[in-house]
Amino acid sequence: MKATGIVRKFDENGRFVIPMELRKQLSMNTQDDAVEVFVEDDMIILRKYEPSCVFCAGMENLVGYKDKKVCKKCAEKINILFED
Image (cartoon, rainbow, N blue to C red):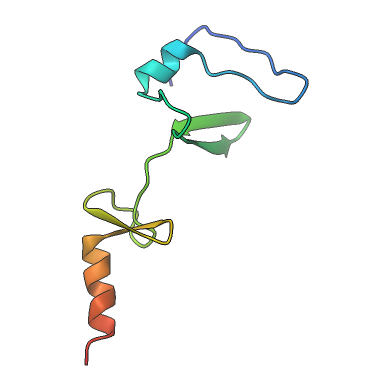
């Protein structure tokens, strides 16, 4: 893990701002970008959210269905289940 030397305080509603320099570094420039939150021991870890397949966690050749992402390989396997 790399230290940035940046310190931010929470506001009265428990929010803090991710500095613009870090958002640019992670290509997070719009309101639509999302962040995943993890807890490990005494650390809160933030990571840019990248959608992945709900079945295998793959990140290539994704197709959307009802706000979920499925890779083409898993979609093909599901289709085989319903063939006659």
